[in-house]
Structures are given as structure tokens and as C-alpha cells.
Image (cartoon, rainbow over all chains, first blue to last red; front, side, top):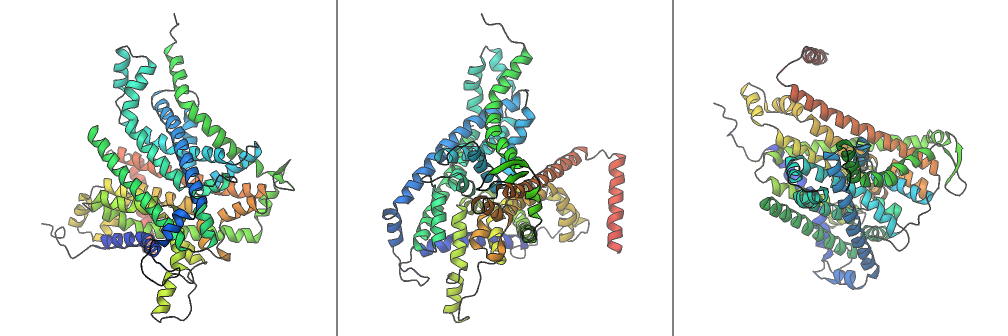
Length: 266
Length: 314
């Protein structure tokens, strides 16, 4: 009888590594959060205060413009990506048409190429066709890097989908539009929505690509953070960091809850 | 009344209607820009930025400059080191996660730092490592050192922060593959007398190869094209290809050279991706062929065994 399975001598090597890795991943996040509550500017702890949060909220008008820009771009680019990506996933999964393998290839490439390449090629493209850099160019760039993820998620969902449902709908007299709105869309909606959430987070997060295609006055939140970091270490950035970490956690939590609700309802 | 289309034309039409909006978007905003970069890399540099439309290999000749060669070597060195460190840390982590009862919670813990804004994470490291930063002020306070150590603005800091940033990129694909692995095979190997390490190396590793190559590519490509990390925590000697490309575009305004460097980055990434797809496909094939052993498969196994044996003897 094998005995080693039940032989437990404290935590194993792998779980120790995992524990330290998680600590390593979280230490920087805790450090900035902790110091955002420090009343002094330096590393000396001089009591807790919310003074940096106050400064962040009331003394940073450009922060709010950047935040507004970020939201507009995140929502618009995610919406575009969701529509185009889902339609394409349906078309590529179920139909044969000219250029199909080309579309599949170019839909994976933006996901795997380094961000610098996407950013530079777009910058050079926009200046070659003389489109002024600004909100519109950022919107285009974000839609481009969001599309592959929607396409991938919806394709994965369609892989589990039983095509005979569509055939049944057609046999019962549904036309193409009815099949799409009554049968296909309801069944892919969970993947579409999780794709939408994913796009929003990626769009709010992106710095490198946005950095290349943004123009004057179109700065997003990450660009604002970048200009602050270049200016030097400041407790106001700590406060902003914590707010953004909190935002991430809320999105991650709601994402998880959302997936659970979807799993329970289907 | 409408004339019914023939089924093949109908399929062609509907497929294009669904697929080509995205196909068109990618053509305009991805394929064309990439083509422009390829074209520009063979053009002559314009006086005030931009290009002159004369075919030349100047940009590629400029790349052979020793200072650029140094950057290329450094980029490879830094990316390989950071990627290998990521994989070495991620393998035990992914294994522990796959064997854990709290998988969703652990995944959640890995995803939170992964989703946090990358600049915020880099900033946190600047805060910790800088000369007046957290580590130095603690060390000074307890009297270990008198003045701040140089922990930041060097290649060590670049590697540390890159590993920090891209660990989740390695952990997540490894976890997915290891999670599918049948752990009873390990017990079987142990029952047959293998040590724990041997059973992991000889039984598990061959089965998770595609996960390892995916993790390698997912970390290596973004690290190879890194721009912000060397810019913000690197020193004068930490410039990587990404920084050169950006400098050539925004400061020196040498677009052909920037395009030529972008070509290198693109080629390296594409080779990596195709290699990853290839290992994935081959593994699938092997699993499908599993029990029925073709003579060729047998031959290659025997050959591999001989090779391994002769290596061991040397």
C-alpha cells in the first residue's frame, strides 16, 4: 500500500512557493495603500490622515478630465468591439466564405504582438493618412486591441453551442434575423457580456498604446498617472493608486459574481 | 416575390455579412498599419520626420551599429532571464494551485494584481526601491547602512519589476494545463519506484509541454517588447528595443529605423507564436494517436531514448 500519499509533513515545497509569490504580488499594493494614509510626505509614519485623498479629489481638476476621457473611450470602444467581435465569431463558426482564414489570422495577431508595435504602427498610419491624434484615434486603437478578446470568448462559447438549435429554428420558419435575435444572441449573451467587462478593464488599464495615439487634451487616466510618476514620488499618487486598486477589486469581484449568476441561470 | 438564393451563395453572403465588419476593421487598422511599417523600413529617412519614397536598405544598415547591437543583446539577455525566472517561480505555484481545494480564491488572488493598472504597480516599486524609498529608509533607521543603496535604475531592478509584472502571464496558462493533468499518474510513477522529482520531471512535464511553451511565449513576447519598465526603473544602461523604437519615432524622428526595429520585434514575436501553436498541435496529435503506435513514432521514441542515453554517458 502506498503510504506517501498520506504522509503530510507540513506545507509542501510548491505551496510554500505559492504563498511567497502571493505575498510578493501583494506587497507593493499594500505598501502604497499604507503610505497613502500617512500624514507626512516622507517615509516616516506620522499618524493617519486622509489629507492626500482630499487633495486628490478636490485639487486635481485634470484628473477628472482624464477619468471622463477614459470612461468615454472604454465604453465606446468596448461596445464597438463587442458588436463586431460577436458577429464575426458567429460568421466564422458557422459559415464558409471568402477571406475566412485571413480574418482568423489577423484577429489573433493583435493579441500576441508587443503593445509597442501596435502603438507605433497606428501612430505612423494615422499620420500617413493625416488623421489628427485625439479621442477618435484612441477609440480606434482601443477597439482594435479589444476585438480579439471578444472574438475569442464568443468563439469559445459557440464551440459549446448546439447548431441543431439554429436548424430547428429555421425548420420552424424563422428567418435569418429572427434566428439571430431569438436563438443565437440569447445563447451567446453571457460570453458577450463577460467580453464587454474584459474590454472595459483592458481599455481603462492601457497605457502604452494610448501613449502613442493620444493628442493634446485627450489624456486618459493611465496617461495622467504616467505624468504624475514622471514628476516624482508623491503621497497623492499613493492615494490615487489605492483608489485604482480598489476599483480593480470591485470590477474583479463583480466579474466573479456575474459569472456565478450567469452559470446559475443557464 | 424574392428569388431564393442558391444555398452556397447564401452562405457566402451571410458569412461575409457577419465576418467582414471585423475583418474590414482589422484590415484598415491593423494590416495596413503593419504593411506601412514594413514599407517604411525600406525607405529613406525624411529630413523632418516622415520618409522619402526611395527604396533603400539604409535603416537595416544603421542597425548594425555597435550601440544598437548592444541594446539588442541586452534585450535578449534581460528577457530570457526574466522569462526563465517567471517560469521557475510559476511552475510550483501553478502546481500548488491545481492541487488546491481553493482554486477560485487563489485565481482571484493572482488576478487582482494582474488587473491593477501597470503604471501603479511600477510606481509602487519605485516607491519601495528608490534611494529615499521604503527599503533604504528602513535600513537606515535600524542602522544597517548610512546612506541609501542604489537599488533602482539598474538592470537588476528592471528584471525584478518585469518578473513581478509578468508572473501572472506565466501562472495562468500553466495552471490551466496542470489542472487538466491526471495526478494519479504521479502516484503510479511513485508506486513504480520513482522519486518525487523524477516522477514530476518524467511523467508530468512531458504532459504539460504545451502549457509551458504557452507560458514562455506569453511572458517572453511582452517582456521582449517592454517599454515602460526599462524607462521608469531602468538606468542609462537598461535601454531595450522598445525604448529605441519610441525614441526613434518621437525624438530622433528616424521613422525608417524605428520601422526596421519594429520588424525585428514583430518577427521574433511571430516565430514565438508559431512555435507555440506547433507544440500545442503536436501534443494534441500525440494524445489523439495515443494507444496506436505507428512505426515512425516508435522509431522516434527509440532514437530519443538513445540520444538521452548517450548524453547521460558523456
